[in-house]
Image (cartoon, rainbow, N blue to C red):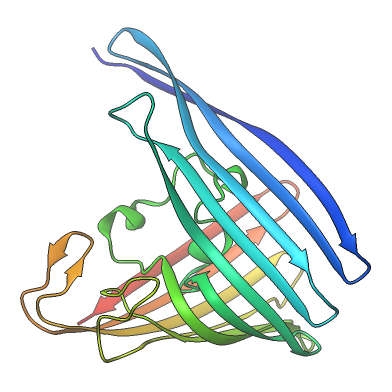
Length: 243
């Protein structure tokens, strides 16, 4: 009989720099260390090391960078580095911001709030939907974002960027992806949101290591309800894909 147990702990580190009166830079990071029991043996593992760099350049401009270092599961010495987010934020007015760079695509609450931030997860692992390769995790482009507007604390995201078949430095397709998301917070700790994502994938494109046989017009519709109180946490969201 097989048994399995999983334990994860996180280590934090923070550095703070004040380069000048106009720029404040912080470096924060964490790493997860796991222990498992399976097939009558105990194993220890070293997971992702996530490094955050935030910098306030002025009262209008700020920067965020997130890089992940992850060891190879087949080698004890080799590892990979991926740049997860590079965001330049310009405050237009109030809580309305112009965003440029590589972002977590705001298609649902989970991807926008957690993604690689495992230390922030309310659960040990990501939802099963993420293993289906449907969710566009990242988008490189430009967009507008607003939050806590009005009595309902209305928020929005509108982003135009490279599609699923593209790289960080080059769009391999002619069409741009579009993400439009809105949410409200009608009560304390309660958030209700919905989003639409559109992308046109060309024939022969390589997406998640699979070659697309014919042109695909992808539309993702998502909705979520969440409440994170002191005694109870609740998050439900769903996504449907129309091609």
